[in-house]
Image 1: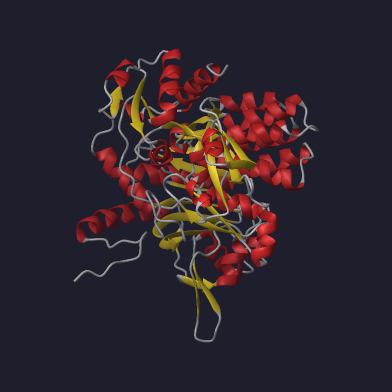
Image 2: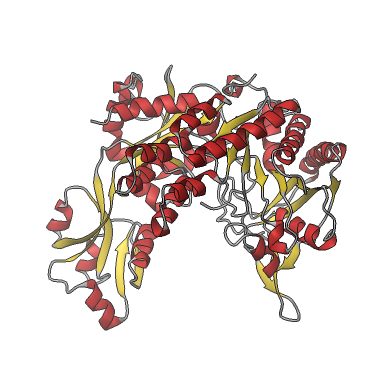
Length: 337
Length: 225
């Protein structure tokens, strides 16, 4: 008799579990080597905790009532629960705190290609070390994790999460129009962005050009110079932050797969400063992401700088399988050294 | 854009960039534009049964316009060309919209019968109006954004019939010349969006093959008159 399971979930059989356990061991081994101790938090949190972490996309997709009527939620990532843990269990500890995790998380996506409702995340959180050193350390761990997983072709995109809000402040774009511009930047809808900017009479030609061209700048560190030429204080500040992070990563010898990307916008509202994404030529979806969230712990009453990354374990496994089958010329990512 | 979550996409192929080319009304002009930028489309024109065409510059896939976002989202195609109407209806798919290619122009409109009283009046009298459409998401967003309550009726074939036989008060549909509307005694009341062909890209391809993607986008942009 057939008993179905909900779309976007799946059973794992021994063959796949063996492969996954190997990958788990590699990832956790790297985290441990860099001094990140594994933590586990409850799969169920109070809904208020998850919502406090992120009012938007990371808000819980699945909620239920407990016996006493409290509203519980399945966590949508591990960053928010670990922020909660750090703020309450290590309240007086300025850190640095180094935590790692490997655990399932849950999101109410419409199940389709590449979208799972229950998926596994592996990552680290570094609490108490500000930019650029904290970010650089996190990128170094990420680089080592990708190396350990055998993903020689994987690329780490490095951008800045503050640049567009600051740029819109500088250009005095407010209210509904600001929301529209940010939404189109986030979707990377360049046609729609051009249309809305074209309708803003207060905007000069140079300012319009900056907003249209900046999100298309991606590649080696040389794109920072092109960004700087677009002008504006917000851009100059973001470029300086990215430059400082890149140099700090380079000093650790981990910048080989880092690409600068001024179009990188993460859709969680807790990011501040550096944002990261991980790509592999074998897969059409991102392998993971992360960045700085210096204000997230403050939402839990323990204001401390923090940064981290998380990898989608199933996708890393798919990319590994594709790499094993024999990398071809598609792996020739630009600017790789 | 919704958060992306770990998934099960099959690994991508190697080689030149893969472009999903729409069949149907956008097909001919798309091939003309590709010719104009030096992509050899003779094989596509000659053989209507094959689905994959290898050229030195690009690998071309011929797919239904409404399937283009699916291929591009998953990375099975690096890039695709399809109508804005398709992108509007499938907004949840995170593809990057790079260039307005400015052909295949249509309008997404609200239309009602010539003799019809206004939709607003019907809404006040009956609490809501019924709208027949193929574009459920577009229609839902449009009426929500304009503060009206509608009941949507999904029709897959000729939507124009629905108001004529009382199945709906009006329609949301894509019109080019407006002739079909006129022939059925329907009148365009509101324009929701101007829809033309767009070049879209897979986000990962846009990052990892930046200069190839940018060069193709630039050459296609240059074909816009």
